[in-house]
Length: 198
Image (cartoon, rainbow, N blue to C red; front, side, top):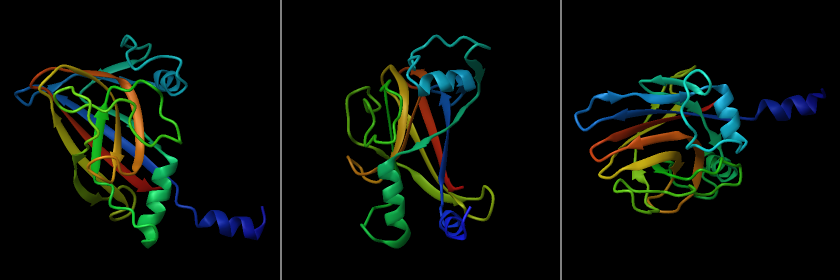
């Protein structure tokens, strides 16, 4: 490895994104949610199985009190993050979260969710405003955290989520699909996104 290559790679700030999803009923009680295992995540990522696959314990994962998984930072999100670092390009803060029913595996070229839905189950392009903060993962304040709760008034099989920087449209930072979380009227889903420079 040359010194030039070492200097170039030393300045890279790969973005690592993770999300936690918690499902609650109308009374605030946590409902069991299916946590995919590595096999299931691999099969979802490569489009071999659908997010609507049967949730078979041990084969594809386990029932837990929350679902946690790594996300994909898309190309437009990487460009937006670069803009936020030095102000070139004028990207707004990534403080909005969307959720939907899209089943297509995320790809680097994605710019929107596959099928974004609102809390009544209708088609929407409006993202919810998150509560934002900086939290510590490795060093002080190295992680941007966005938290939002969707309060559903209809039955929806939620299979995807993403982070954006505008109420409608805007630039998408990251997206991920997951096995369906079936919500009914009165249920809520809390998404906690953590994006850190790895």
